[in-house]
Length: 210
Image (cartoon, rainbow, N blue to C red; front, side, top):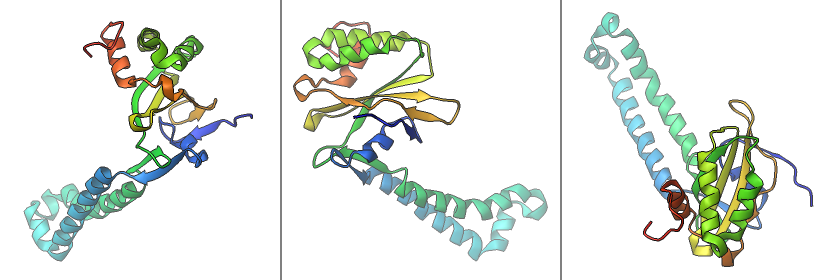
């Protein structure tokens, strides 16, 4: 089955997750939702204080002449930030989980150059826990590469022993593409990506003591 490249809005696999409702489901992060909700609430309070007592606000900021820009900001920013917070509650607080399972986290993301032998790294990652040292060596190689036009990203849910590896192409300042379909690591080869990545950065050959 052929894969149609996907345009991504950010450096994650959310765009691909959305095409696989059989595997993943979206939700809003309670922590982020609460955080943006608090910001929105504070902006409402500030807006009320400013608009219900405009003359007091002007005097507090030094008068119309001395506090020109500050006064303009005081009247304009609260509603703008409030609207932005509401948008972030529905967009920025979004996360994905394995369908019927745990939340997907992104413990590893590294950039690399177009000429980097990424296929060797992917082959090592597919081996997973069957070759832990190989995974560490592969991640260390990516870490040492100085490129920034490609991204290797790993998403996982330890509770489900689910892990997905994807590649993202950086095309200019604001264009990101998922050219090839991300793949899953076999559940029996699931590994702790965060610990393996840390071991790689520390120059270790195993995750013992990490």
